[in-house]
Image 1 (cartoon, one colour):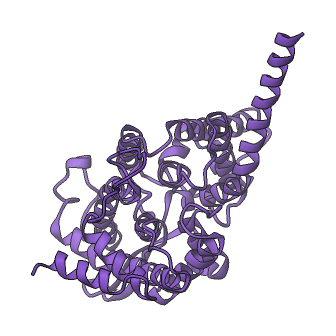
Image 2: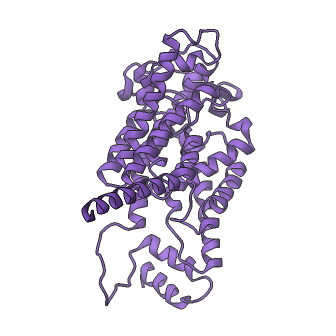
Image 3: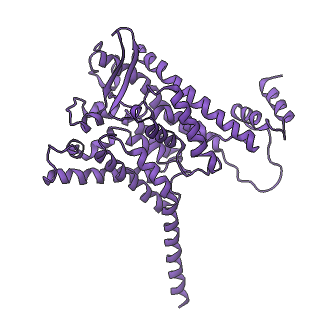
Length: 401
């Protein structure tokens, strides 16, 4: 008897009992359901929640793997054992096994804790409520390690994951009912509870370094340099391809762009939200550039460096590109109407750059902007729908007049 048959027998044995959701979840995760419908009208489609979640994970994997290489590369760069790559994205110095292994052993524990704790909470709530285990956390579990500092203590991450899943999702009824993005809820909990670990201006490079004889090395991010009005020598190519310090998933704008195109092609991510968010960020960047060019802000101001940064460069530094592509497009927490998506996305990009510039103590604003707009998304949709209703009523009155 194969594993599939054994699991199916257990599923039938515990059917209707308290632990049924746990066995059903394991069986559904590994295999397609054996049950098929026999009556009634049904819309047949290849996509379901599990396939949707797996597609998003596929779009995230390149960022995860690149982040592992980049973690090792940033360590070697900071410790002085190698020089900055000269051949760009195809440099053998960057794609070395040593770089990958350093990142792998530091990042994989975050992934394991994120999935282990998050899915455990999901199982507990499924058993308590007596419903099926939902696949919504499959993407959240992958997002969390990509948006937190690599040196985040595992116990701290576990506490944040429990808070994010329970308060950010389960109290609202589970997947599809939450108003806040669970991954960003976890990030917000860490930011407000442990701000010393989430400063946003420094990034982990490596811990327990045997070669250099020090316990840890930390290097400033590009936003950290700008917030502190310090010069940096990263080229546009470095920032675009991702050879810069930062959270695991945010550094490579190139891979994020490819992931965004993949999500658009598979019709999972909204191109309206992505495009409007980019436009919002560019508009806010242009406004700040105009203020600087008009001489209203001098180079003695603490906001000058970030305000004078070329407007388009905001998209290739920090986490704004990652947030726009993978979290602003969350179909549950984003606006549902087409016009609402344009408004929702534009305000995310606009507010992200606004927070980034005027909050130099934490020079990143995309996660706060997305959470804020998650709250206002239903209101945006409400007024869009009411506007459409009024237009139709006007047309009806004209026809009957």
